Length: 492
Image (cartoon, rainbow, N blue to C red; front, top):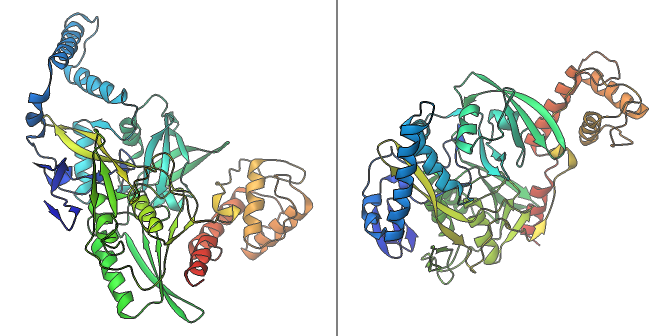
């Protein structure tokens, strides 16, 4: 059904026709094939059999039947004559995955019985893992965004980090499903990841944990006497729009003068969740979203809102903002609101999860989503109206120390420590990785402040303490230049 122009969660709409599907198969905005221990993107009920595939059998033409015969012949040939034993199920799964691989689409994938069970565990509130969303980018398992307060965030993992190894086992050659299986695990278990960030390679050990499920965080700030509401959205799940509207109502009842919506590091989620929010802001004379099918036909969706809000609004984005976050950001941008930060990820497709057989599932790209003006941001991202980068230390990687670093040595890890010390306010004369006398003096001051052994050398304990101090400073938002710029832009 369509209510106020919104795609309802329990129905999947194709060119005006309705196909009843279980709630798990609603239109999803997947930024990754799997969430490693996060419930945000995968919401719904257990996978159940539907008539979706049966209703489409009549559309198979003669050429398709000939091709299916080839697959059947290949299956029989391998099963009967290959020199080693083969499992028929593995052959079928390989054939299905092979077809999907030819699409060259990291968001279309096959989930076997085990992967489907994991999917169901996640949507049944089994929130355990490292707390990050990943995608396959240029053949590499790539982090889209770590989840707020998750082990991944606490370990300093960042958007665009590539996971190269898991417990010393290379991920090269694995598909995303197989890679994710190696990263997932029960709360309390440990996993060692080898990470590539730019040209730097480092290792982190994480303890898997229960992942926080809160997706909406609200606060207020007083800017030159103006009460400003700030709502941070970490993902778009079933309850996100409800929680968002509750906080927005509270703000409006207390007559806020302006609003900041922060979707930095938000990898996306459910389409109907972000739709509910946009219907609070985009007037009825402008579509808040366009959906384009495989034949190029577009459907436009409208709210029933008479007018824009009376108060100014700014949206915060970064390279970890993807999918549903981008729908929100670009829609508000195109109706005249400010978008502050750095260019977003660039994910402009919509997937549907469809049961396959008794124990499998295909997640397939069905649609493109377009902005109110009809723009497709896929692999381009949403450009902010004002680009603002964070301080250098926000992008630093963990310091790897095997032996203490000393005077006159040069190393990327020394450079990282110099950037961190500078960010914490210590005097640093060079940030090129050369260990000079000023670096030694600043390390001595840092060691004294934190009751460490004062050596002036960068040892493992000093490095660990420095990292913790930096993470706390980032969390406190003392140098959040993007937030400062968003607040300043509201009342100009």
